[in-house]
Length: 380
Image (cartoon, rainbow, N blue to C red; front, side, top):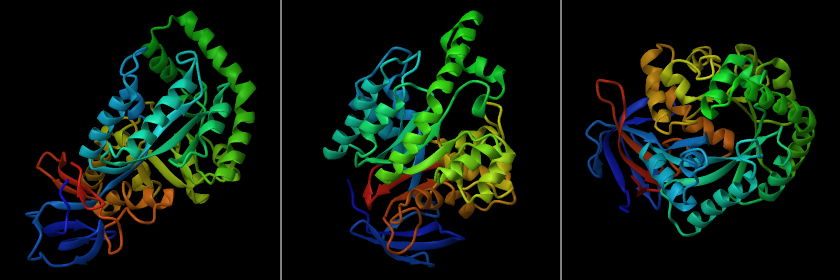
Protein backbone atom coordinates (compact mmCIF):
# COMPACT_ATOMS: atom_id res chain seq x y z
CA UNK A 1 0.00 0.00 0.00
CA UNK A 2 1.37 3.39 -1.02
CA UNK A 3 1.89 6.03 1.67
CA UNK A 4 0.53 9.52 1.16
CA UNK A 5 2.65 12.61 1.89
CA UNK A 6 0.88 15.49 0.14
CA UNK A 7 -2.05 16.39 -2.11
CA UNK A 8 -2.29 19.46 -4.34
CA UNK A 9 -4.85 21.15 -6.60
CA UNK A 10 -7.90 19.66 -4.85
CA UNK A 11 -11.40 20.91 -4.03
CA UNK A 12 -10.97 20.37 -0.30
CA UNK A 13 -14.29 19.97 1.55
CA UNK A 14 -13.76 21.50 4.98
CA UNK A 15 -16.24 21.78 7.83
CA UNK A 16 -17.88 24.97 6.56
CA UNK A 17 -16.43 25.71 3.13
CA UNK A 18 -14.79 24.31 0.01
CA UNK A 19 -11.33 25.57 -0.92
CA UNK A 20 -8.99 24.95 -3.82
CA UNK A 21 -6.15 23.79 -1.68
CA UNK A 22 -3.45 21.37 -0.69
CA UNK A 23 -2.70 19.25 2.35
CA UNK A 24 0.36 17.68 3.92
CA UNK A 25 0.42 14.26 5.59
CA UNK A 26 2.97 12.65 7.91
CA UNK A 27 2.74 9.31 9.74
CA UNK A 28 -0.91 8.94 8.83
CA UNK A 29 -1.89 12.37 10.17
CA UNK A 30 -2.85 15.60 8.44
CA UNK A 31 -0.13 18.14 9.28
CA UNK A 32 -1.23 21.06 7.11
CA UNK A 33 -4.18 22.42 5.16
CA UNK A 34 -3.39 25.32 2.84
CA UNK A 35 -5.66 27.51 0.73
CA UNK A 36 -3.43 27.32 -2.30
CA UNK A 37 -3.29 24.84 -5.13
CA UNK A 38 0.13 23.66 -3.91
CA UNK A 39 3.32 22.80 -5.72
CA UNK A 40 4.13 19.27 -4.51
CA UNK A 41 2.25 16.06 -3.91
CA UNK A 42 -0.40 14.04 -5.71
CA UNK A 43 -2.17 16.27 -8.24
CA UNK A 44 -5.96 15.95 -7.83
CA UNK A 45 -6.59 18.01 -10.99
CA UNK A 46 -9.57 19.68 -9.35
CA UNK A 47 -11.19 16.55 -7.95
CA UNK A 48 -12.91 16.70 -4.56
CA UNK A 49 -11.03 15.73 -1.40
CA UNK A 50 -13.36 14.48 1.36
CA UNK A 51 -12.71 13.03 4.80
CA UNK A 52 -13.10 9.25 4.95
CA UNK A 53 -16.76 8.37 5.42
CA UNK A 54 -17.94 6.97 8.75
CA UNK A 55 -20.71 4.36 8.76
CA UNK A 56 -22.50 3.68 12.07
CA UNK A 57 -25.12 1.13 10.99
CA UNK A 58 -24.76 -1.17 8.00
CA UNK A 59 -26.41 -4.57 7.62
CA UNK A 60 -24.20 -5.56 4.70
CA UNK A 61 -21.92 -7.96 6.59
CA UNK A 62 -24.93 -10.11 7.46
CA UNK A 63 -26.12 -9.92 3.85
CA UNK A 64 -22.76 -11.17 2.57
CA UNK A 65 -22.72 -13.89 5.25
CA UNK A 66 -26.26 -15.03 4.38
CA UNK A 67 -26.64 -14.19 0.67
CA UNK A 68 -29.77 -16.37 0.35
CA UNK A 69 -32.26 -17.73 2.91
CA UNK A 70 -30.67 -20.71 4.61
CA UNK A 71 -27.31 -20.22 2.86
CA UNK A 72 -24.37 -19.16 5.07
CA UNK A 73 -21.09 -18.15 3.44
CA UNK A 74 -17.61 -18.58 4.84
CA UNK A 75 -17.54 -15.75 7.44
CA UNK A 76 -14.03 -14.51 6.62
CA UNK A 77 -14.74 -14.50 2.89
CA UNK A 78 -18.02 -12.68 3.57
CA UNK A 79 -16.26 -10.11 5.74
CA UNK A 80 -13.52 -9.47 3.18
CA UNK A 81 -16.07 -9.05 0.37
CA UNK A 82 -18.03 -6.62 2.55
CA UNK A 83 -14.83 -4.75 3.46
CA UNK A 84 -13.81 -4.37 -0.18
CA UNK A 85 -17.24 -2.93 -1.06
CA UNK A 86 -17.15 -0.57 1.91
CA UNK A 87 -13.67 0.76 1.14
CA UNK A 88 -14.46 1.23 -2.56
CA UNK A 89 -17.46 3.32 -1.46
CA UNK A 90 -15.18 5.75 0.42
CA UNK A 91 -15.96 4.40 3.90
CA UNK A 92 -12.89 4.20 6.13
CA UNK A 93 -14.59 3.50 9.48
CA UNK A 94 -17.51 1.08 9.65
CA UNK A 95 -19.66 -0.18 12.50
CA UNK A 96 -20.82 -3.60 11.35
CA UNK A 97 -24.34 -4.19 12.66
CA UNK A 98 -24.69 -7.69 14.09
CA UNK A 99 -28.19 -8.72 15.08
CA UNK A 100 -28.81 -10.24 18.49
CA UNK A 101 -31.92 -12.33 19.08
CA UNK A 102 -33.21 -15.51 17.49
CA UNK A 103 -36.54 -15.61 15.68
CA UNK A 104 -38.66 -17.94 13.59
CA UNK A 105 -36.36 -17.48 10.57
CA UNK A 106 -33.06 -17.86 12.47
CA UNK A 107 -33.55 -19.96 15.58
CA UNK A 108 -29.87 -20.20 16.54
CA UNK A 109 -28.76 -16.59 16.08
CA UNK A 110 -26.22 -16.83 18.89
CA UNK A 111 -24.08 -19.20 16.82
CA UNK A 112 -23.98 -16.71 13.96
CA UNK A 113 -23.15 -13.77 16.25
CA UNK A 114 -20.17 -15.73 17.55
CA UNK A 115 -19.02 -16.50 14.01
CA UNK A 116 -19.31 -12.90 12.78
CA UNK A 117 -17.78 -11.14 15.79
CA UNK A 118 -15.00 -13.74 15.83
CA UNK A 119 -14.28 -13.16 12.14
CA UNK A 120 -13.97 -9.39 12.66
CA UNK A 121 -11.63 -9.87 15.62
CA UNK A 122 -9.47 -12.35 13.69
CA UNK A 123 -9.37 -10.18 10.58
CA UNK A 124 -8.30 -7.16 12.62
CA UNK A 125 -5.51 -9.16 14.28
CA UNK A 126 -4.29 -10.43 10.91
CA UNK A 127 -4.62 -7.03 9.21
CA UNK A 128 -6.86 -8.43 6.48
CA UNK A 129 -9.15 -5.40 6.23
CA UNK A 130 -8.98 -2.08 4.38
CA UNK A 131 -11.42 -0.06 6.51
CA UNK A 132 -11.44 0.01 10.29
CA UNK A 133 -14.19 -2.33 11.49
CA UNK A 134 -16.02 -1.98 14.81
CA UNK A 135 -19.19 -3.71 15.99
CA UNK A 136 -22.71 -2.36 16.50
CA UNK A 137 -24.95 -4.78 18.41
CA UNK A 138 -28.53 -4.62 17.07
CA UNK A 139 -30.57 -5.82 20.03
CA UNK A 140 -33.98 -7.20 19.07
CA UNK A 141 -35.73 -6.63 22.39
CA UNK A 142 -38.64 -8.98 21.76
CA UNK A 143 -36.45 -12.07 21.37
CA UNK A 144 -36.06 -14.60 24.19
CA UNK A 145 -32.27 -14.92 23.94
CA UNK A 146 -31.19 -11.34 23.12
CA UNK A 147 -30.04 -10.57 26.64
CA UNK A 148 -27.93 -13.73 26.92
CA UNK A 149 -26.21 -12.88 23.64
CA UNK A 150 -25.69 -9.26 24.67
CA UNK A 151 -23.99 -10.31 27.90
CA UNK A 152 -21.53 -12.43 25.91
CA UNK A 153 -20.37 -9.62 23.62
CA UNK A 154 -20.99 -6.20 25.18
CA UNK A 155 -17.53 -6.00 26.76
CA UNK A 156 -15.56 -7.08 23.67
CA UNK A 157 -13.03 -4.41 22.69
CA UNK A 158 -14.42 -3.96 19.17
CA UNK A 159 -18.02 -3.51 20.38
CA UNK A 160 -18.67 0.24 20.62
CA UNK A 161 -22.40 0.79 19.97
CA UNK A 162 -25.71 -0.92 20.74
CA UNK A 163 -29.18 -0.14 19.41
CA UNK A 164 -32.52 -0.92 21.07
CA UNK A 165 -34.75 -2.41 18.37
CA UNK A 166 -38.30 -3.72 18.30
CA UNK A 167 -39.74 -4.83 14.96
CA UNK A 168 -43.02 -6.10 16.38
CA UNK A 169 -45.80 -5.53 13.80
CA UNK A 170 -48.17 -2.64 14.37
CA UNK A 171 -45.71 -0.12 15.81
CA UNK A 172 -42.49 1.82 15.15
CA UNK A 173 -41.24 0.94 11.64
CA UNK A 174 -44.32 -1.12 10.87
CA UNK A 175 -47.24 0.99 12.05
CA UNK A 176 -48.79 0.32 8.64
CA UNK A 177 -49.55 -3.40 8.58
CA UNK A 178 -49.64 -3.52 4.78
CA UNK A 179 -45.95 -2.60 4.82
CA UNK A 180 -45.24 -5.40 7.29
CA UNK A 181 -47.08 -7.93 5.12
CA UNK A 182 -45.28 -6.71 2.01
CA UNK A 183 -41.88 -7.03 3.66
CA UNK A 184 -42.19 -10.31 5.56
CA UNK A 185 -44.72 -12.21 3.48
CA UNK A 186 -42.99 -11.22 0.27
CA UNK A 187 -39.63 -12.33 1.63
CA UNK A 188 -40.73 -15.62 3.22
CA UNK A 189 -43.66 -16.73 1.08
CA UNK A 190 -45.91 -17.38 4.09
CA UNK A 191 -49.62 -17.82 3.44
CA UNK A 192 -52.14 -15.40 4.97
CA UNK A 193 -52.94 -17.87 7.74
CA UNK A 194 -49.25 -18.41 8.45
CA UNK A 195 -48.72 -14.66 8.59
CA UNK A 196 -51.51 -14.26 11.11
CA UNK A 197 -49.90 -16.87 13.38
CA UNK A 198 -46.49 -15.30 12.85
CA UNK A 199 -47.78 -11.85 13.84
CA UNK A 200 -49.56 -13.20 16.90
CA UNK A 201 -46.35 -14.92 18.03
CA UNK A 202 -44.32 -11.73 17.55
CA UNK A 203 -46.77 -9.72 19.66
CA UNK A 204 -46.71 -12.36 22.39
CA UNK A 205 -42.90 -12.31 22.43
CA UNK A 206 -42.89 -8.55 22.75
CA UNK A 207 -45.23 -8.64 25.74
CA UNK A 208 -43.07 -11.26 27.42
CA UNK A 209 -39.52 -10.05 26.73
CA UNK A 210 -39.20 -6.46 25.44
CA UNK A 211 -39.44 -4.41 28.64
CA UNK A 212 -37.27 -6.81 30.62
CA UNK A 213 -34.59 -6.95 27.93
CA UNK A 214 -34.58 -3.17 27.47
CA UNK A 215 -34.01 -2.43 31.15
CA UNK A 216 -31.21 -4.99 31.43
CA UNK A 217 -29.41 -3.98 28.21
CA UNK A 218 -29.52 -0.29 29.13
CA UNK A 219 -27.98 -1.05 32.54
CA UNK A 220 -25.28 -3.32 31.07
CA UNK A 221 -24.45 -0.77 28.36
CA UNK A 222 -23.80 1.86 31.00
CA UNK A 223 -21.48 -0.52 32.83
CA UNK A 224 -19.63 -1.41 29.61
CA UNK A 225 -19.40 2.21 28.42
CA UNK A 226 -21.28 1.57 25.17
CA UNK A 227 -22.98 4.33 23.21
CA UNK A 228 -26.70 3.63 22.84
CA UNK A 229 -29.09 4.25 19.96
CA UNK A 230 -32.87 4.00 19.83
CA UNK A 231 -34.44 2.63 16.67
CA UNK A 232 -37.51 3.55 14.64
CA UNK A 233 -38.89 6.04 17.16
CA UNK A 234 -42.43 6.90 16.03
CA UNK A 235 -43.87 8.89 18.94
CA UNK A 236 -42.86 11.50 21.50
CA UNK A 237 -43.20 8.78 24.15
CA UNK A 238 -40.60 6.68 22.32
CA UNK A 239 -38.14 9.57 22.39
CA UNK A 240 -38.88 10.31 26.06
CA UNK A 241 -38.09 6.68 26.85
CA UNK A 242 -34.85 6.89 24.86
CA UNK A 243 -33.81 10.03 26.70
CA UNK A 244 -34.50 8.40 30.06
CA UNK A 245 -32.34 5.45 29.02
CA UNK A 246 -29.36 7.65 28.16
CA UNK A 247 -29.59 7.12 24.41
CA UNK A 248 -27.32 9.37 22.31
CA UNK A 249 -28.58 8.58 18.78
CA UNK A 250 -32.13 8.36 17.42
CA UNK A 251 -31.87 5.95 14.49
CA UNK A 252 -34.43 6.19 11.69
CA UNK A 253 -37.27 8.12 13.39
CA UNK A 254 -40.37 7.32 11.39
CA UNK A 255 -42.43 10.50 11.96
CA UNK A 256 -41.92 14.26 12.08
CA UNK A 257 -43.16 14.31 15.69
CA UNK A 258 -40.47 11.85 16.73
CA UNK A 259 -37.74 13.77 14.87
CA UNK A 260 -38.79 17.06 16.48
CA UNK A 261 -38.80 15.42 19.91
CA UNK A 262 -35.34 13.97 19.26
CA UNK A 263 -34.04 17.42 18.30
CA UNK A 264 -35.55 18.95 21.46
CA UNK A 265 -33.90 16.18 23.49
CA UNK A 266 -30.56 16.92 21.77
CA UNK A 267 -30.27 13.40 20.38
CA UNK A 268 -28.31 12.94 17.17
CA UNK A 269 -30.82 12.08 14.43
CA UNK A 270 -29.71 9.33 12.02
CA UNK A 271 -31.52 8.46 8.82
CA UNK A 272 -30.86 6.15 5.89
CA UNK A 273 -28.88 7.34 2.90
CA UNK A 274 -30.99 5.11 0.59
CA UNK A 275 -33.99 7.15 1.76
CA UNK A 276 -32.24 10.28 0.43
CA UNK A 277 -31.20 8.67 -2.86
CA UNK A 278 -34.65 7.15 -3.51
CA UNK A 279 -36.50 10.21 -2.23
CA UNK A 280 -38.55 8.13 0.20
CA UNK A 281 -38.43 5.40 2.85
CA UNK A 282 -38.69 1.77 1.75
CA UNK A 283 -41.19 1.31 4.63
CA UNK A 284 -43.37 4.26 3.67
CA UNK A 285 -42.17 6.46 6.54
CA UNK A 286 -40.87 10.05 6.58
CA UNK A 287 -38.46 11.41 3.96
CA UNK A 288 -34.89 11.97 5.14
CA UNK A 289 -34.54 14.88 2.71
CA UNK A 290 -37.54 16.60 4.29
CA UNK A 291 -35.94 16.22 7.70
CA UNK A 292 -32.61 17.58 6.41
CA UNK A 293 -34.29 20.67 4.99
CA UNK A 294 -35.89 21.32 8.37
CA UNK A 295 -32.60 20.96 10.23
CA UNK A 296 -33.66 17.62 11.71
CA UNK A 297 -30.92 15.38 10.33
CA UNK A 298 -27.43 14.90 11.79
CA UNK A 299 -26.14 11.58 10.44
CA UNK A 300 -26.68 9.41 7.39
CA UNK A 301 -26.20 5.64 7.37
CA UNK A 302 -25.81 3.54 4.24
CA UNK A 303 -27.98 0.87 5.91
CA UNK A 304 -28.31 -1.68 3.08
CA UNK A 305 -26.39 0.01 0.18
CA UNK A 306 -22.80 1.06 1.10
CA UNK A 307 -22.32 3.41 -1.87
CA UNK A 308 -25.49 5.30 -0.96
CA UNK A 309 -23.59 7.15 1.78
CA UNK A 310 -21.44 9.09 -0.69
CA UNK A 311 -24.22 9.30 -3.27
CA UNK A 312 -26.63 10.82 -0.73
CA UNK A 313 -24.13 13.50 0.32
CA UNK A 314 -23.99 14.82 -3.24
CA UNK A 315 -27.70 14.23 -3.90
CA UNK A 316 -28.77 16.35 -0.95
CA UNK A 317 -26.79 19.33 -2.19
CA UNK A 318 -27.98 18.90 -5.76
CA UNK A 319 -31.65 18.61 -4.80
CA UNK A 320 -31.87 21.22 -2.05
CA UNK A 321 -30.81 24.86 -2.18
CA UNK A 322 -30.79 24.90 1.63
CA UNK A 323 -28.00 22.34 2.08
CA UNK A 324 -24.39 23.04 1.11
CA UNK A 325 -21.89 20.32 0.23
CA UNK A 326 -19.89 20.86 3.47
CA UNK A 327 -23.15 20.42 5.42
CA UNK A 328 -24.11 17.23 3.60
CA UNK A 329 -20.58 15.80 3.83
CA UNK A 330 -20.65 16.43 7.59
CA UNK A 331 -23.64 14.04 7.78
CA UNK A 332 -21.36 11.18 6.69
CA UNK A 333 -18.08 12.25 8.32
CA UNK A 334 -17.84 14.83 11.11
CA UNK A 335 -21.25 14.26 12.71
CA UNK A 336 -21.10 10.46 13.01
CA UNK A 337 -17.55 10.79 14.36
CA UNK A 338 -18.81 13.17 17.05
CA UNK A 339 -21.79 10.97 17.95
CA UNK A 340 -19.56 7.90 18.28
CA UNK A 341 -16.83 9.70 20.23
CA UNK A 342 -14.23 9.34 17.47
CA UNK A 343 -12.33 12.56 18.07
CA UNK A 344 -9.38 11.72 15.81
CA UNK A 345 -11.22 11.65 12.48
CA UNK A 346 -14.19 12.92 10.48
CA UNK A 347 -12.81 16.15 9.01
CA UNK A 348 -9.89 17.52 7.05
CA UNK A 349 -8.00 19.48 9.66
CA UNK A 350 -4.53 19.59 11.15
CA UNK A 351 -4.03 16.81 13.69
CA UNK A 352 -6.78 14.56 12.32
CA UNK A 353 -6.25 11.11 10.83
CA UNK A 354 -5.44 11.08 7.13
CA UNK A 355 -8.60 9.14 6.24
CA UNK A 356 -9.33 10.65 2.84
CA UNK A 357 -11.35 10.10 -0.32
CA UNK A 358 -10.76 11.41 -3.85
CA UNK A 359 -14.04 11.94 -5.71
CA UNK A 360 -14.89 13.00 -9.25
CA UNK A 361 -18.40 14.33 -9.85
CA UNK A 362 -19.57 13.77 -13.46
CA UNK A 363 -22.54 15.50 -15.06
CA UNK A 364 -24.99 12.73 -14.13
CA UNK A 365 -24.40 13.48 -10.44
CA UNK A 366 -23.29 9.97 -9.45
CA UNK A 367 -19.91 10.42 -7.73
CA UNK A 368 -16.89 8.35 -8.73
CA UNK A 369 -14.48 7.21 -6.02
CA UNK A 370 -10.99 7.57 -7.49
CA UNK A 371 -8.91 6.68 -4.43
CA UNK A 372 -9.25 6.08 -0.69
CA UNK A 373 -6.67 6.37 2.09
CA UNK A 374 -6.83 5.25 5.71
CA UNK A 375 -4.15 6.59 8.04
CA UNK A 376 -2.42 7.90 4.92
CA UNK A 377 -2.21 4.44 3.31
CA UNK A 378 -3.97 3.73 0.03
CA UNK A 379 -6.73 1.13 0.55
CA UNK A 380 -8.80 1.55 -2.62
